[in-house]
Image 1 (cartoon, protein in one colour):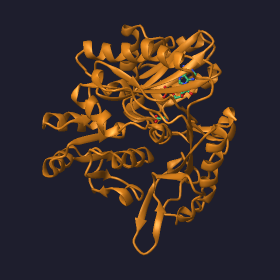
Image 2: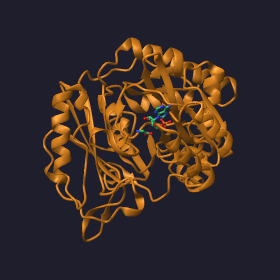
Image 3: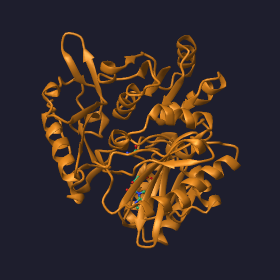
Length: 423
Ligand code: AMP
Ligand code: GLY
């Protein structure tokens, strides 16, 4: 069958890489793809949110499966249009995707399904929001309701900070319409954990857990990014904890969505905090995480296309248990100078070193493109993820870092402390 992966990040490169290995697949396309996906699949110059042309392409190629990568595709209704046209889609409808695209919607699902989360309130006016945060001495997280590319959360430690965060969203409208409604919640403490599960709307299968590193710089300093690295399995996470997350977070969320008439098919991603009072859910995403996908998919030994088809068709209950490589996997993102400050990044830099990768390094491309006559150049904030498997986290980390060091372009930087806690 022919498979289309929608998107252009390193997550989509990892998905393409995994789909190509499936015995069910004769050809893989990626729309629009990047400089890396073009090497192992056919890139199609259609944007990830271009609903009309994606449906035309699916009909023309008689696609057997479409995998949605980014939230922009979900939110544009790509899944709805393709499903209406009769295609199996691994990815939720726009309505189900609101679990990511509206934090207040996600909170209402959590509240009704009894999912443990931080105490919260939804505001559109600054004065009542500030009153609520004063009662908590400003120890809150202020969140833009809508999509903000992972950057719409401001964690505050004082009333000055929370006032400024509320004003930035509700008064200065720094997040545009996404921040016209805000969710303010109590600030929690503890290590974070991402759990991803495949669901067909009724049943769930948990994927291997991962931990990602959201801050731009070493030691968790600097701005929040889409993610600077990840590793799997994370230290201190055992099967019992995953089972608790599936039973108390994943399955209740999926069942609540189904009861509400917004059946969710695809990957449901829970961002969790392990507080001293137990698990708390910070957010849901309606798709694979990036860079989590880059460290989870290499550990998956089962056929991903068979799994995605089962989810798309509502057949997860009869899908065999997933097989996992017991090795650890570490992914280190190499980013453009000044990332995540889009305005200050200098793109179009010639990338060198990718052909001399140490053995065992998988390079998943994100912001790369082929410039005719020049070669591979940078085309985004996160440029590549250097990924490696290893018998121990330490080995995987050493190889992934060696790969990251090989990637050379003006302004390149990466975090050398990814997975450091586990070694
Ligand atoms: P979110 O997009 O909701 O996952 O938030 C992004 C990041 O902000 C999370 O990964 C946490 O590091 C942090 N964060 C979100 N909510 C809270 C909270 N209630 N308390 C402390 N930190 C939070
Ligand atoms: N790594 C976080 C995300 O994909 O949202």
